[in-house]
Image (cartoon, rainbow, N blue to C red; front, side, top):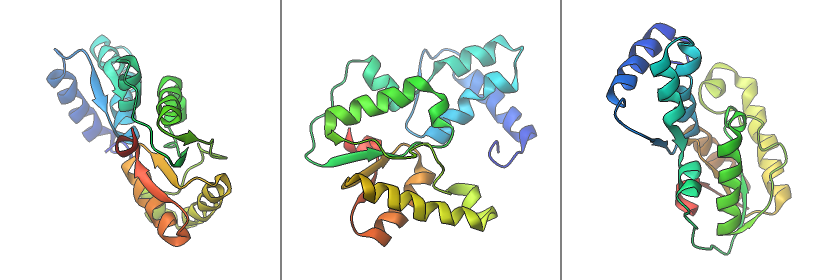
Length: 178
C-alpha cells in the first residue's frame, strides 16, 4: 500500500503490525522494501511512541547477522551488491551487507549501487525506467563480478533479467550467498 500511496490502508495495516509485534524485541526482514515499509511507521505516526518503538525493532537480515557475530562461509566468486533505492538511507544495513559479502567472497563495489534498477511499480508505471536496467547491467559487467547480490525481491527480478541478457553474471538474493 505504501508504495502505491494508499496511506489509509498502510496506516490500518501498520497499526495491526505494531500490535502483533508489541512483545517482540527484533523484527528481522530479508527484503529491503519490506523493512522500509515497516520502518516508515515512525514517520507515518511521528507522535506515536509505539510506532517509533516498532520501527526501531526492524533490522535487515544482514544487520541482524552482523549483530549476532555470524560469519558466512566463503564462496569463490567475485561479488557485487545492488542496493534497494531506499536502502542506502539505512547506514547500518548498508555497512552490514557489504561486511558479510566481503567475508563471503571477493567483494567489489558496484558503481552507482544506490541508483534504481527500475524495478517494481516504476518499471510498469514509467517505461523509461527500463533504461535504468541497461545502465545497471553495464555497471555490473564493469565490475567483473560473477554474482550481483541484492536484498530486494523486486530488484532481484529485474537483476535476473539483466543477468539473462548479459550471460556474464548471476543475480542472487543476499540470503543465498551469506
